[in-house]
Amino acid sequence: MTIPFTQPKGLFIANRWVPGSGGSDDVINPATEEVIGSAPVGTLADAEAAIAAARQAFDTGPWPRMSRAERAAVMTAMHAGLTRRIPQLRELLIAEVGCSQHIVDAVQIGACMAHFASAIEVSLKDDSYHLPNEIVPNPMDGGATNWLGGAIVVREPVGVVSGITAYNFPFLLNLSKVVPALLAGNTLVLKPSPFTPFSALLFGEVALECGLPEGVLNVVTGGADVGAAVTTDPRVDMVSFTGSEVVGAAIMAQAAPTLKRVHLELGGKSAMIVRADADIQGAAIAAVGMLSTNCGQGCALSTRFLVHNSTRPAFVATVQAVAAGWKVGNPADPSVLLGPLIRKAQFDKVAHYVQLGLDSGATLVCGGGRPAGHDKGFFFDITVFDNVDNKSQIAQDEIFGPVGVVIGFDTDEEAIAIANDSRYGLSGGILTADAATGYQMAMKIRTGSVALNGGMAKMAFGPIGGYKRSGIGREYGPEWLKEFTNEKTVFYPLGR
Ligand code: NAD
Image 1 (cartoon, rainbow, N blue to C red):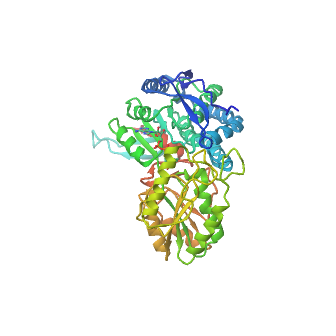
Image 2: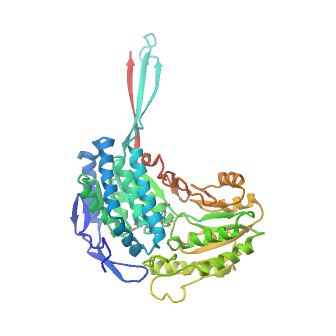
């Protein structure tokens, strides 16, 4: 059976399909290790061609000069083109990422199409504003009459943007570069993860169909060499990156000599605080749900469970019971809740952290390796450690697998201090029967977002991003497009 979109016509540069000059690479389904297709591999020469196309489209093409309404019309057609492809896209994401179907529907596709729709709406609003009129003395002649001046502040696209993305939610992450960059009038070179090329290349097909002018969107596959090219080239004005902390820091350095704007969405090690008054069954299901979401490969997933010491034993026992009933397997089966990790290297990394946890003296509550009966695919059991020291590596590093740590606390202040004792600051949660106290605690947590009692409302409109080493800038929400624009002030005389 052929998985949709796994036979791309090439890389997408200047509205043409071009063969990748690096040949092609097999892409595997992480649940079966079977090849799902062969994808063209981009090289420095392809990156060069894509940057040139994006630069020309920005400097001389129609896109940055179109009205908001004209751009929104093309992007609305793109939204419609993607919407028509959702059934095939689902199939692709299940096979390309190994993500379970309920997460594919809710997050890999549902949430991002909602972000897309709300961004189109926001893009239509004129966000220019006037400054108050001002009377100033004539600087050349103090005896002359004063001058009267006004000013308008407008927003303009930054220019050529490089969008570089991670593998875990590829369609969402790619869309999170395409939508704001293009709606704001920029041109884009998109470089997806080498593990997930197909969900990026399909944008070429939709771009042609919706009438995007030549060079506005370019998709080049490849690895770190292509990523380095699109973050160092002087013709690129801005880099928007979603990926790991280490690569984020490297990209900042790569972009420094040419002083590009850098927008970074990086990793996390978020804490879920379970107060003594929280419902333990609900908390345990939330914890296992976090660890199993995309097999723990999610930047904003809470993987540190800070649990009040009075209920910690009950929480740990309930987590163990819930995890034992969680269905593992190939996500092609819609009842599966836990799919595989992306590749063997990620499996080995997670196994290494489990060993570090054991070496640190933490107590292994469940999991710890490959689940029984799943010999093919990169499956890893839901793994939970108790009696964890927050200073240990399993509590401080982003493992990016289904591994959670339980840390006890006695007071709310202590819970907040532990939550904040992290180099990351992406997300987090609080579970409590006392919403007002939970709200006050949320205000003291140094992260870009906090979910109170699992609160998810308005997700399609809320800005997301990091404090500390989790990133710089925000995605989504009413200000989303502003990350991809410059403010320009035009001063004018009203009278002299
Ligand atoms: P990664 O950092 O290894 O790779 C991300 C991308 O960067 C890939 O496309 C890769 O080819 C490219 N790259 C690698 N080296 C580069 C270089 N020197 N210059 C330019 N590009 C380079 O990340 P990953 O393993 O694909 O994804 C997992 C990471 O992504 C996790 O840390 C996760 O938390 C993070 N993530 C963050 C968010 C967020 O919104 N904050 C969302 C999803 C994933």
